[in-house]
Amino acid sequence: MIPTLEDVARITGLRVDGQAVTGVTNPSYQEMAERLLGLEVTRERSSLVGRTRLQASLSVADARHQTGEGHTEYKARLTAGAREALAEEEGAAADQDLRRFLIIMIGKLILGTRGDPVSCRCLPLLEDLSQVGSYAWGAALLAHLFDSFGTSGRETGVAGFFPFLQVWAYLYLPSLGRGVPRRASVVLLLQHWRFHRDERSLRLQVTLIQNALGTVPFGHVEWTPYAGEDDADQPWVELGRPYFGREI
Image 1 (cartoon, rainbow, N blue to C red):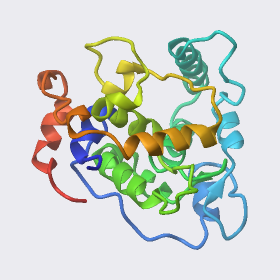
Image 2 (cartoon, helix red, strand yellow):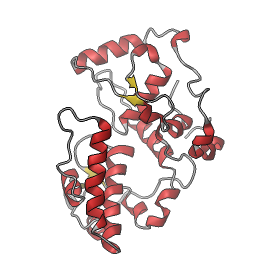
Image 3 (cartoon, rainbow, N blue to C red):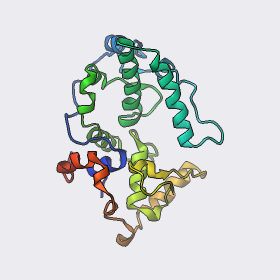
Image 4 (cartoon, helix red, strand yellow):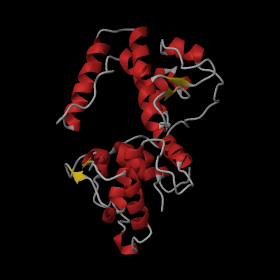
């Protein structure tokens, strides 16, 4: 029982059809990062650029959650700050800002790695901005998530877009515990949930989840969580339907 391309499409809205996210990993991204982002990578032979420097370049370095602030309010404040900065740019400068935003989204969320710096491995795919939307970023997200799964029982971290896996568990394994539903009809399904913060220690949480996973009865699994979804409002689901059921 594993997350599938259909899960990615329905939960995140990222496309699972289109051009493959692939290419050659370069030994150094210095020249490309300076040319496309206007920023230096952390070291000469590295693919990493500092997250705080990227955020500062988009005027969102200090946009952190404030006490008592909901996720919607936080996102609105973050968006407003970024749009204000982008509105002052045009031409090549606007393209550079867009690439900075995209590399944060791809390098920290879709294909995120452990640690704070942002990977520039996908920067070659951002050179032609007109082609960025044609890539199957959803399929890349799932492949990257599979690749990051550890085999050690002591492993407590997962690289990649972890909220996807969290919502997948909400949908298929409700007996393990869920976040709080926000709006039943919301699309994307990722936005349907308000995550529930567990204040217990991480070690205890992992132990409880491992024990629960070992004893989940067949009847406690929701095998068809999308039966009531209206696909007419989800064109990315229709586009990806020929790929559902395929292996990556």
